[in-house]
Image (cartoon, rainbow, N blue to C red):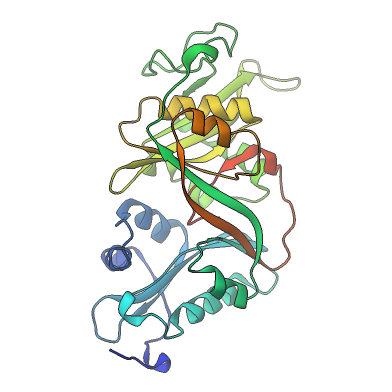
Length: 313
């Protein structure tokens, strides 16, 4: 069926009541339903959509996540198969860029299929991303002494967990948000504050408090693991002071996973790709991080190892 580009309804803001239609749009394009992720995005981000002219759900949708007045990301850009090649994807992305603001840098993860459109809209490549997926094999030999012999802080932690990692509590959220903001260079609080209810588990990395800090131990890294349909465990975000600390956080979350584990990593960084392969995770997909507008280093990017999701660049 041919539908003229100007016959689509106006682009509108979607909300939680549109969850079922967003899930159906994912399935229409052969994606996983991702109901939990759509719920998160509809609650924490700005989701724009277009109703299908035939009355059957959505013709397309895209997600804008704001990290500040001058920084945002785009994700989940989907057009129903029956409405492909009608200019709807361009219209949705143009709307998103305008909504983000003239001064904003917008980033996204681009597949080979989507990259030509993004390039026409002015996006430029920033770095590569590779999804490493597989059954995680833990190497328990070098993690137990990481915190000087301290017993695991979490009563429900498996015996093979690194000793400086524990399950996060509600009281850790301010420290997590502060550490993440310093590393990311912008405030992701609207999304991260929902991690405790969205993720299967959130863990923190602790270190002795430094000079001028309250006595005890402070949070110096964190990571989350969440279930993606139909059956995989995605570890993200993963924010840590260095590669060895990142490995301990991954080990804590992945060692007990009952489904294949996925890490989205920059293959040109030395810390984790080779280690992930040695632990049983194999390259399963390549995307490119692209940016629209002026792209400059923010925060402490060497502490950022995986995104929350490729829908939230």
